[in-house]
Length: 330
Image (cartoon, rainbow, N blue to C red):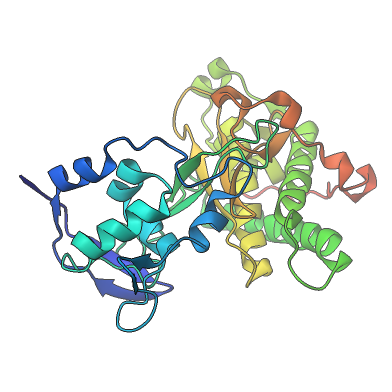
């Protein structure tokens, strides 16, 4: 029995390529995965990503890391959700599948591809550890998908004003953390995120959080935008999430060659708590400025431990918080 997978358009670090239709033998996958349990081949004490980076590239005495295959177990794992679901981070099962099925299916294992992407989009997937930097210290991976983010309905003039402040915050945070050493150091990004979260919270303290009734009766949509947080002095969790998200976008840009810093708007457009789920230091993290919560792992509303919350005062003085407001824009 074969299952036909959808044609995917893939982008490789900005170079778009079209992948062919892949025919996937489900029964063969199930047979190989029989007896597999999450964590086989991976010690809970070590980083799953690093385990895959050093995973075997040999099968039946043949090394597939060289020409013409250039097989990389980490890339093979990241590129295909069906393999992640079937095998987890098991290097032995991944190389076995690649040799027996992946090569003839023309699966990509020599570079990281972007799933479900199309030109000019920001669709991508990052597969990162969830708990290895938390108090749980356990294994587990999460797929964080990136999408284009709504600005909440800002006018062009409002967006220009909000982006100006977000950029200044990002540069301020970067300059505060980065100069302590020349090269990227693991843990830099979470410091920047926590600090940025505290600054956005400080802007909130200057304004008013609208209730659900006030939102329903409001003629303005400013409360759900970054402009409302930075300048308009009225906000909801939707606005604070978008405000922090703008700062994170600029932080990702100014960090340039460092590991990616990407975020997802959790519960966007819902009557529920909203926050940023983040790819940070190649691990899962979160930031919730309305509650002043940020840290590695999952948000407390998703089962994360509150003791893992980091306070921005560890990384900044109160006097560092930027509170200068620009004039309102109609």
